[in-house]
Image (cartoon, rainbow, N blue to C red):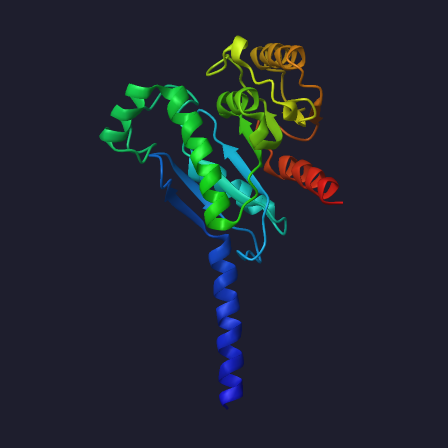
Amino acid sequence: MNTTKSLVLIILAAFSTSVCAQELNLMKAENHPMQYYVSLPQGWTKAKQWPVVVVLESASKEYKKNAELFATARGQMPFIMVAPINTNNGSQGRRDPSLFPYSNETWDYMEKVGDCTFNNEGLQSIIKEVTVKYNGEPRVYITGFEAGAHALWSIVFNYPELLYAAAPVAGNYRGRCVEPSKISKDPSRVNLPIRSFKGGKGAPISPLIEQWKEVKQIAESNGYKNISEQEVSEKNHEPMPAEVLSYFQELLTTRKK
């Protein structure tokens, strides 16, 4: 009887650990006001190191919903999913508590230091925190849909050494938080995989096409040499979590060989 009870307790504990690992939890960075969602992969344990995917939301600012899409699409893939609540993805909705969990004090701080400083420092703080708290790899994979790509390109051009790969999806580029004369010269930029995704259904969105041409030219002229494009014929204008994560998994598998 005692043996049976012990087995039941072990099974329940294992199930509970698995469920908790995949839950989406809202966290506040310990050393920065930025908040973020995190979801751990199946089988997570701090005894080993895990790859990390940073997911940047569009101007819709549905941070939790977007994080859930990626956490679901992850399936059995080993990625820690991190979805920062960044604020440089469109100016609408600032200080709106239905969109952002930030206090007036945090908004005041944001306006004092500026969006570029707040978001760049916040993202760096979160990456470091995930490395320590969840044994995530110190370099990450990053993706952003539409206006989510503003923060993506800021990291790509300012801190390429933090990245294993970048995947903008129908991404915007307006040079936000990117100063042409200060684009990084770190050697990691040269072979950093950058792949732009877009859906093949529906009419082409001209501004996005032109913005991609512009940012691609800027990247190439600054020594970024591993740039590609992928059109997904069966997809509309959407974040494409399955396609992006499959791309990152392919890169991860190659890197681990």
